[in-house]
Image 1 (cartoon, one colour):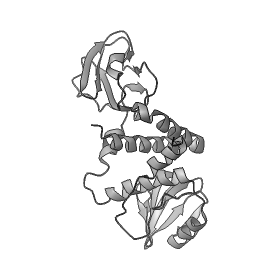
Image 2 (image 1 turned 180 degrees about the vertical axis):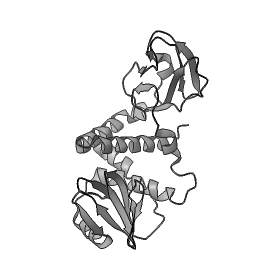
Image 3 (image 1 turned 90 degrees about the horizontal axis):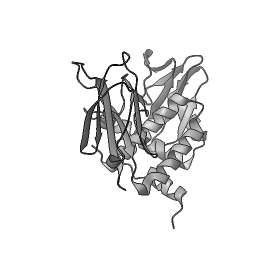
Image 4 (image 1 turned 30 degrees about the horizontal axis):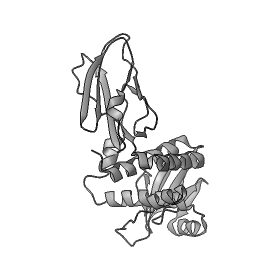
Length: 264
């Protein structure tokens, strides 16, 4: 029987096909003030940018940036100063890596690399990342392992009815809730061993505004639950000190399984 750790590693090590031979580094996570510089011109560094041999990175005091190279090796730079491309390349040559995290970051690198030449950049991300809404919990773009599933929201005013829509794959539930700010998803909608996509949204029942983008959840296939739990546990153990970075990585993991399951 294949050990669970081997299964986890094989998931992360799915073959990837780079589109460019040029050495470059992905800016995966930026904390506070970091700039990318080219020919003396500075621009604010943003997640998803790449650093090539034309660029340098300027890190302000109290700021940091996580960079990723194509093989998935990652590195956090937190010391203030200017880093040339050659300096970054040298630092990467001595950086240590973990098999699981490197494979995870290989996927992330490829995702952003592909988006550079795609007009419909990050199709799944566009459907995953959300702005503010009435919905509170569970957190958006999460995996669901325990049941029943309790949905909660924060009302604009007390005691006003809310329209709640829930979709599980192709089954739609549309209802109005009064005098409560929570709803339990009917368990009959969540039965089965295959992967499911649960979407939900809520809005005041008398609102003339369109329904906001729903929160998304993956209910993993029965055969994958322990694998995903182990992956999430690894991320939490490794990146617990930086909750914002941890949440980014959890969403990237969510997106990867979303793609693998081909959920719509």
